Amino acid sequence: MKEIKDMEFGGERPLFASHDLKLVNVTIHAGESALKCCTDIVAEKCRFEGKYPFWHVDRFEVRDCLFTPGARAALWYSRDLTMTDTLVEAPKMFREMDNLSLTNVKIPDAQETMWHCRGVKLRNVEVANADYLFMHSSDIDIDNYRQQGNYSFQYCNNVVIRNAVIDSKDAFWNTDNVTVYDSELTGEYLGWHSKNLRLVRCRISGTQPLCYCENLVMEDCTMAEDADLAFEDSELNAVVNSAITSVKNPRTGSIKAQSIGETIIDENVLAPADCVITTEN
Image (cartoon, rainbow, N blue to C red; front, side, top):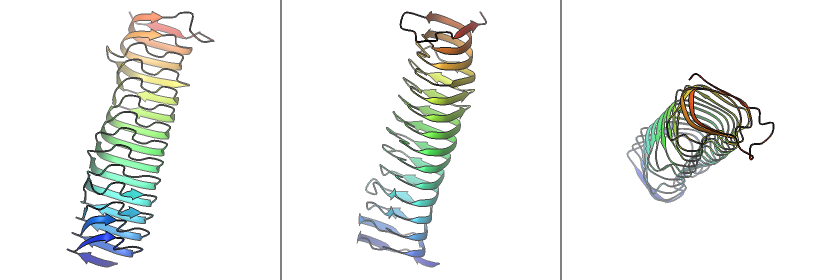
């Protein structure tokens, strides 16, 4: 593998169509598409300032690097990425990608990130300002994760999340086959129109959670006081180890909770309207 060390590049496509290349302490200045159409690339302790540096790249590693805000949309249409110990300040990262693994990565401006990605593995990752994160992505495996940003995981499928703190209005809308373990989920309108959403030992905060769900399962979860008007028009089997402020018109299934402050069943409840609701108190 050829090595380039302690150098600087800028302008249009300075390393276009490179193969079997290792970059060490290299700076990519303003410009576009520095490493477009490359294969088998390693970048270590590098700084990326220009736009679109990794487009149409296969088999690449990014270690201990910095993507400044100018390196927007840096990784698109690429496959087989391993990124570790990296700070990503650039927005709109990771689009139309397959098989990407991020470990010890921080993304403080994650708006419109991880769209149409398949085969995503995150370990010890923090994201913020992450509106519309993970749109239309699939086969996602996440552990030890912190997120702030609304409208996340919409239209995703085959997702497993463990040990997460997710602050996100409208999270998990229109998802299919998502399981979340041992996590804190904060935000309004959680999980609307989802299918096969399973929450295990999770804490739920925010108004009107988990409405219009199909095959919702909750195991040993807790719900905060502001998680009111829950489960409208949902098909569910829920075990909640706390009080629930209010439940409104669940469609079918069962709900078991320590107590329920208000149960609203009115003329708007949808058939079969046979949800079994029980409390310990």
